[in-house]
Image 1 (cartoon, one colour):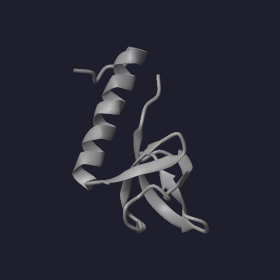
Image 2 (spheres, one colour):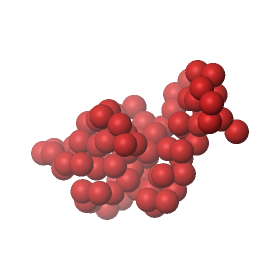
Image 3 (tube, one colour):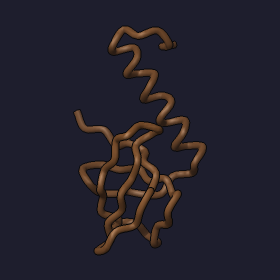
Length: 83
């Protein structure tokens, strides 16, 4: 199964690339921004899939998506904090 994830731009790199943080973790991904309709900025949230930023996200939408993903991971791991 493939999953698109929200990520926040931490740094803009050369060649339509961006370094993004996933949630509040120490997980970073480098993604291509070439598919976006407008140039991104540091602090923008993106929906990322297979190394490409598909679109910008509203910050509240990104936070809610991350919350739901954490909740699903907790359920999968059997950790309290599920539904």
